[in-house]
Length: 265
Image (cartoon, rainbow, N blue to C red; front, side):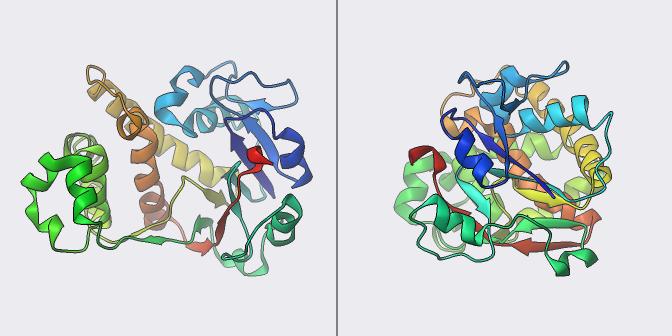
């Protein structure tokens, strides 16, 4: 099993290698040549601020998977979020993390195609936070003040209904309807983390996600994307679309994700 670990910091290569992960450097930092990166012959590395992890996914798609097929599990984590056997452990050191880190496929994965992170359950966002984050969206839909907030509500409040509406309209009719249904639920398999059984599945996903994201980029090219919630808009859109698409097309199961900041050791 190959797990690529994506990092925007250049000070944790040895730590990630000790965890038997493949370190990948992203963003504006200068990384030593030992790091894998997103700057292949065909790349969108300069878009990392907007696309986040997906600049490496694009590099992998266009420069590696075109020449090589992986028959074994291939997945992704980040320098501070990892696939683990359990959650809720008080991780104090790299050794603590290493004890619960998943490095090989689990026996019960054989009957599945894709592994997603255990879902975050969305509930009621505090009214003060709703109003502070996006008062105009609250006015458009006052019911968010009184009811549980779905994935769609959360995206509208934090990132704006304009982006969601426009991006939905760029999908096929079938996917638009089904994705809207998905967004009206309260569970999200988060962080753009997933593990695929083989690269054939991964290629199918890339052939679906990137044309849509590039259409979104063209649609929003004249929009000011300042501020974290808008700057990384394509990464946020992909974070919602990824679990929807995998669940729609493949057999999926979930695995715990644990938080630990390797760059601060």
